[in-house]
Image 1: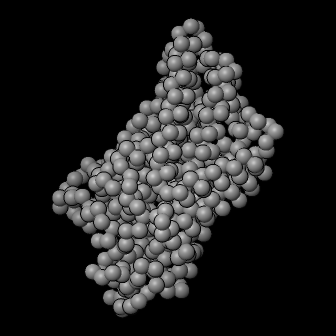
Image 2: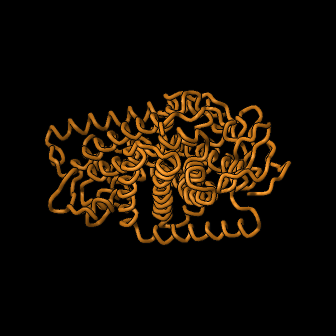
Image 3: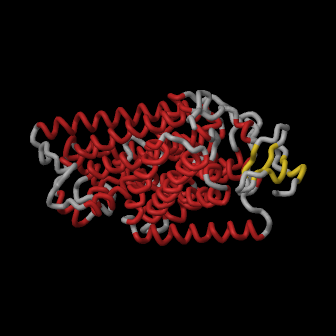
Amino acid sequence: MADTPAPQSIESYGYQQELRRSLTFTDLLVYGLVFMVPIAPFGIFGGVFQGSGGMVALAYVLGMVAMMFTALSYAQMSRAFPMAGSVYTYAGRGIGAPVGFLSGWMILLDYVLVPGLLYLIAGVAMNSLVPSVPVWLWLIGFVLLNTVVNYLGIETTAKVNKAVLVGELVVLAVFLVVGVIALANGKGRGFDFTPLYNSHHFSWSLAFGAVSIAVLSFLGFDGISTLSEENRDSTKAIGRSMVAALLLAGTLFIVQTWVASLLVADPEALIADGDPNGTAFYDAARTAGGSWLATLTAASTAVAWGFANSLVAQAATSRLLFAMARDRQLPRFLAKVHPVRRVPVNATLLTAGISLVLGLYMASRSDGITLLSTLVNFGALTTFLVLHVAVVVHYLIRKRSKDYWRHLIAPLLGFAILGYVVVNANIAAQRLGFVWLLIGAIVLAGLVATGRKPRLAVADGSDGLAVAGSDGSAVAVAGSDGSAVAEEEQK
């Protein structure tokens, strides 16, 4: 069966167009780049260096390849179902509503926890620069600032994104120029290929174990899919912007970590002892250009993570909560859209509240950043596995597609790579992630037992929407406020 683009209108799926369609391909691309943060490796460089045996560039190459297969699957599902909700929507409609619920539950580990993680990292970084201001006060300031910007509307967020992205790219360019000049003048170890391959340390399990850390830098390209209902271009724009953002960011990650690796003063010590203070990249910058460059890279990391990245993360999280609430799989008040701003206002405020409480709590723990990072990564990677399955089920099995590359081979390759990364991930992350999945399964069982089995909307040809069961049959017609106005017996 031919693969044709899905209609842009979400009314054909049983929803009303409530969010404002104002984002172009460029807006989506910038959003994805800001979400991933072009200078993301600054903050986790030491951990990836230790985990990869110094082969940081290799870890990012493998991570980009793995994420590229995932981006291709996202592109396919975003064309089939151009709605907010990310993997929750794609798994629910591509496989079945209960699977969508569990996928949404698992991706919450990523989407709901990541703003808190970003605020915490930024607060710690700013506290290191201005010790007189405590971490908790920086954290509160970042939360309030981002909530106001997101409340003003997606257009305001898009404008801020562009300005911040330019600033990050300028800082990155300065580091690369100064770093390359320093290497040419004999500082560091000079040019070699050890950041890509070092025979003394290489093993596939080591490399993929490092990918499970490095992948944190790539998380965010998938956030573009949550803006499907605010995209004003064709359905292809979502997938294309994901792939473009991933390629651009991945290239920047590889180049900057390669240069930084060559500037590490004592690679073996960093591999053996790790980077408990999170300053390995800034130390490399100091080797290249002195204290001013170290300060510049540290300050830019704080602003990028605490403002830019967390700004778009909060926006993406609110859209996921909005999508699940609209289908009555979360409390209905989260589906409320501001009549003027056209943003999911309650979901935005709840996301800010969770981020604030979570950030303040984790700031009191010595392992707060590590714990949040492992949970975020595990939640994202497990849902990406489901995404690949959804592509095969929806296109190959249901639609009987003959495009075996995009609908079978690419998803299988992506699944295999990510599966290997998950197996080699941190044990604590695996345990906590599976506990979260078990809780989600219990919640799902409770919904089924009380007659509230997850269902998704389908068009019924009226002003309302029909709610579909996992087999696609219409069981109820709902008004725009989500209240049931008619019931049909499920066949």
